[in-house]
Length: 295
Image 1 (cartoon, rainbow, N blue to C red):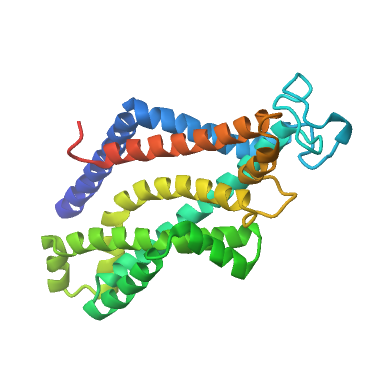
Image 2: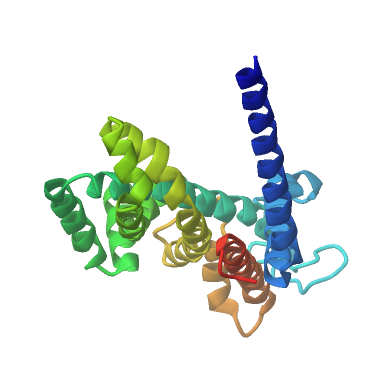
C-alpha cells in the first residue's frame, strides 16, 4: 500500500512539474517580442483566410468593366483590376489560397522529412539511398523543379501543394537526419537497446519526440517559403489556375498596368510580405523558446 501511495504521489508530482514547465514555456514564448508579434500576425492572416471571405460583400470573380482600374475608395478599399473586380476581395480570397498551400506544404514536408530522417539513421544502407535521393532533388533549383513538376502534373492547387512538398522535403529530411543521429548516440538510447526495445519503438517513441523541436521551427520557415513559391508559380502562370484568386496571379495581372494601377501590385505584395514576416518572426520566437541555452 505504501508503494502504491508513493507511486501515486510521484505521478502527481510529475504532472505538476510538467504543467509548470508548460506554463513557463508559454510565458517565455509570449514575453519574447518577436514571437508575440509573429503570433499576432500569423493569427491575423489565418483568421483572414478562414473567415475573411464571410465578411467580404463583393465577389472576387464578379467583373464590372465599366469600373475597371478604379483607385482605392470607400466602395473598393483596394481599388479594382482590369476587369473591374474588387482587389480587396481578391486579396482576401487569395489569402485563403496562399495560407492553405503554405500550411499544407509545411505539414507534409515536415512529416515526410521526419520519416526520412528517422529511417536514414536506422541503417547505413538505407541512409545512403535516402540521402542520395535528397541530394539529387536538392541539386535542381527549387523553382525550376517546381515548374517542371507543375508542367507534368497540370495547373491545380493540389498539384501546387504536391510539387512544393516534393521540393521542400529533402531539406527537412536532412535536418531530421542530423538531429536523429545526435539523439541516437545518447546514453538513454543505448539503455533502451540494452533493455530489449525494438528498433521501431526506439525510433518513434524516443528519437522522434526529441527531434520534433527543430523540425517545428523549420516548418514555419517552409510555410513562409511555400507562400512565396506559390506566388512565384502563379505569377509565372504555372500555379493556381485562374480565375481562382491568388496573390501571385493578382501581381501577374497588375504588372501590365503597374504605372497606371500601382494598387494592384502594392496590396497583394504587402499581404504576402506580411505573412512571410509573421512566419519568420514566429519561427525565430519558437526557436528561442525551445533553446535551453537562451535566456
